[in-house]
Length: 421
Length: 139
Image 1 (cartoon, rainbow over the protein chains, first blue to last red):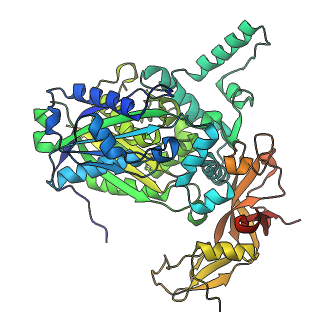
Image 2: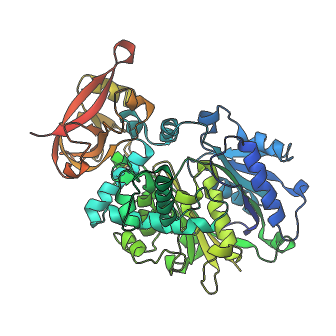
Image 3: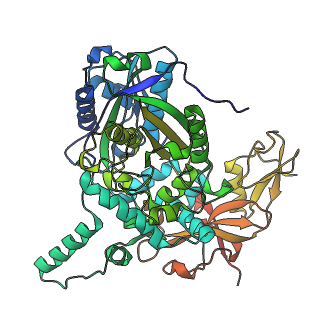
């Protein structure tokens, strides 16, 4: 039986921070989380006494596999001085920290806690690309893993089904990549800071310096069509369709709504929460959509009492370019089969009517899997508070933003809607 | 009547015997492949084993150039990518499988909808013996 979800009491975000995302050989998970936590503390406009934090919920996916260390709740709690306060790790593959947000919200909404820290951390770059692919594939179904599916492979199969159903092509995927890279130089925390044009020039410059033939490309799409510049990973997906391997951490401070103004005059209220589950490729009724995202979106919109058109800006899980296109449809931002057109028309650009992934998305900001969900809300925090600097969207009366996080190959999806009142 | 427990261990053992086995709900007749122990359509728990024929068509696919370590051991890499796909069997159920006998270096030659039939691959020996579900084009 369907009913409209609601919280027992309101919850607000009053602080937010993230570490730089990238590949850091000389930094570990603790360092990264401390960096995110420090920014979170300093972002609380009226200050926070850390002794008042009741609990920590921390998302982490595969540090066990990548760095042979488990049990990250108390480890992180200890390094920021919260012990003996309770610390709980949440795991939902690449949506692990979105689950931490939900747990934190529920704990406050129930009345059990008033002030909760939620975050995420992941340390991936100390493994080879093949090992990371193997580690991430732990979150696909066993049937997929056993025959050699990787994450890019699963999304490659999604892309070929989508192309076949709606007539989109590789060129439409490139529009997503070019858009994300255009936002990248504007985010100082991101892993990649170059537009595709910047990268083209850098490659030409390098060739010139080495005295080699200088490659020429007519435009960005010619560059992305060049297999030397953009090799295949899992057809039809190529290197520039895939998010990078990243290290990073992210952190939010959640408090009961009635206390929010004690911390800031510009809190973000949790307006809608949704989470859904999905099946493996073999059991999906439609290979060109994500059932878990659709369910999460329906729940969140229902709780918020708003429609997709009311969401002014969103971070959408673009682990692969095709994922952003399909999710635009699953989140109701356009009709099914029209996501690729929405991107092509420029509607998702920074200056479009529905800016998507102003942070540069997972593609450019980076995707330290367990930290991603919270970092998406961090971007919405920056935008709704008009603190996004050069990437601030020019929308008038910007009030409602949302973050969509996907785990595994669609096994766990969340949608979180935030409002600045 | 097949009496093996309905689980993935039995499914894999059947594959080694070159049988593709799914389950059918005794109440509503819904079919599942790989086998499901409980009917996820009507939620009744009585299920029976059913062999699925080996004919179907390709629904979607990918050709993987960046192979995980387990596939590298089989000799796959950028110069020798492998094709995986979702196959819909004539019975309406679907599986993920290796797609053999197609040119994974030229994915544009692989057509969604192409008719396929099953071909079980046997990998490893002794304790490590396992069957891998594959399909190839009907010639």
